[in-house]
Length: 633
Image (cartoon, rainbow, N blue to C red; front, side, top):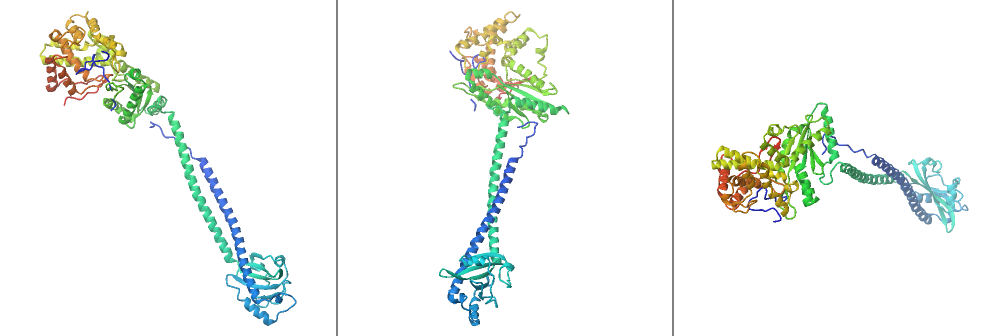
């Protein structure tokens, strides 16, 4: 027998089982600094884009201007060559021969076909000595023109072209309709000899207009490309800045959060409590805190490893996120503790939030290896400012103090700072029996609650049997003291969240003998002693310690056995969750005639199902909040 037995029903001493797991408070968000570097880089980029666009416009404009002039000069040179070849003999270009007026007239008439409005304004043929042979400007034939550097360069065979004001176009007294002209000096060559030049004056306004349109188009395209690039750069920089900001905030936030549960850590919680109290000092606004401790956490780690403890922490943290009010901040305060901080608007709801949390935990359980479902329960200490302390450290100390009381009383308990204990516990005049009950409470809060439940169920059975008042009183006392021997059971065994070894189970069995020894010297206690020693005997003789069977088991012990089994099955323990009342009654029926007295089981089940006010599991007494299991359908 190396583990706790698991019969059709479960008695407190017989059955540890196993288990299955089906914001910033009061503060303001710190605004990230403006991205100054981004603005500076962005502005510099726009300046570079503007300068590049201007320079490109100038360079491309100059290139376009040169290409345009080159094209025009080449075109005009071809036209002039064709004209001269057709109408001007080489002899007419030498100074040895003078043209007659008729010849000049014919030549100028042919020359007059070259000018076009908005393009060529004037054409003039000159000999090498500067004498004008023919011109589209009447009356200039035979005149000599002073040679300049451009003319001399053209006589060497190099075409010349320049745009300038009409007054500086070198056309003598001639006037032009256009204020700006393009002057071309094209060499007239016969073989390798340059015999003269042809002067062509073009309207430069259309040329300059095309050049300006080109510059504007280049500038527009460049600036547009720059704007698109700037927009893309802005988006990239803004995304990078946002990412850096998020990373910085995450880094700062990580110093305030617990890495396992992703909740606020100890330092952040203490800071929030201090801030809340400082804000509440001016108008004495109340602040509430609740310190929550996971019951049997150390034993859970010791028996199932730290992964099991982490799973319990994550389960409680998840339940807190789901069930606490949005105004209440919470976080991991210690290795197995969580702290809730309620601002003034939520202080009144703090107790209700705790009850909701504990109710939600009833539906949670853990399973490790081949264990039964292990319940998750918590002990809670609640304190408020300014009722229980005037500083953050004092308030936390008050909550920690009452939390220790809740843990010392067996766990699964809520304590309030400043709450008076039960009168019987606080009174200096309580009797010996009450002292023993208090000793049980100090040892294990579950044992005291379980004993109170057994007393209620046992007296209920007694009333169903029609027993006298004095017998009912004896049954009640025996129910309260039936597990007094557990005072001598080590905590590591009594609260172990898992199967007991054979040696550990043998130690647990001795609690009935130890309880008998504790109460044996009290006066008029024989019936109570019988109930304490024999309440784990079985109807079929397979119980302990004396292996009594049937009617040989004292009736008081048989009554306690039924009450003890029902209480054990309907109460959550560290090693298994409570059963539904209906299922527990079914298991009582299954055990009737083997483990339990069939007549007593029938009386109890019938009373629970048909009595107007049957004793059901669960109660609320003093500062202790106990969740109610489901009632009979």
